[in-house]
Image (cartoon, rainbow, N blue to C red; front, side):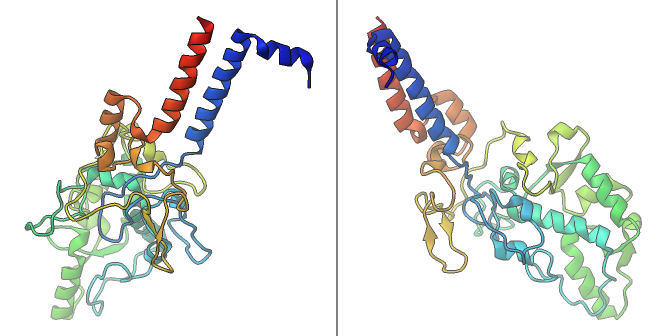
Length: 324
C-alpha cells in the first residue's frame, strides 16, 4: 500500500472528506439501483403494480412496456386477438375488417390502456366501487392525447368502415353489430370519415370522452413508443397525483407481483422493484400518501429512504464534528 496515501487518511480532514465521498457514493448506488414500480390504478385485467415483464417471441405487440408494465404477457398477447379480451358480439353481419394500417392504431390503443401505468392518473371514478351505479375502476376521462397521434390515426382509418350508431362510440359496436344481425343487413357500417368529421372528433367521440385532442405536444400522451426506450409518457403531467386506491382493491407491498404461470406471489425484489418501492415518490401507494409527489415534496425524504438517510446523516454529522 502507498504509505503517503495511508498517512494522508490519518489526517482528520482528509479522513472526513473520504468518509463523505464514501457516504455519497453508497447513497447514490442504493438510489440508482432502486427500480420504480407504481400502483396500477385501473382495474380490469390490470396488475397491481407496474413491474418488469418478459414478453416471449409469441407476444408480438405491447413489447415497449416490458420494463414497467401493468399488463401480463398473457394479456399483451391477447390484445390483437379478436374477442380475446373484449367481445364485439354477434359477428354475422359485422363490418369488413379494417385495413392493417388502421388496425395498428387500435392495437396500440389497447396496449396503451392495458399496460401503461400513466392511465391510472386519469381514472374517472374516485372510489370506483362496483356497488355504486355506473361506478367502476376501469374507466378513464379526458386524458390528453397528442394531436399528431390522433391525426395519424384518423388518416390511417378514414377510408375504412366501423359499425356506429348515434353515439359514435367504440363501446357501442357490440350493440350496432346486434342490430345488423337482427335486421340481417350491414346498414350500421359506415366509413370513418362519414362518422367522424376529423381527427379530434374521432379521438374524443370514439372513446366516450376518455381522451382529449391535445395540440400542445408537451402536454399530450402517445399510445406507442420504440421498444427498448424509456416510456415518454412518464414525463407528462409529472405533477398530477395518482387517485386514491379503489375500494376493495389492495396492493401487496412485499409481494406485489403474481407469477402468471404458477399463480404464486412474487417478492418486490424478484419482480424487479425496490424493496421499498411503495414509499418512493410517485409510487401511487397510500402508504406514501397516494398523492405521492406533493407528500414527498412537503415532508422531505420518506421512510422509503430512511436507511440511507439515517446512514448519511450519522456519517455527515460525524464528519462535521471532525472538521470542527
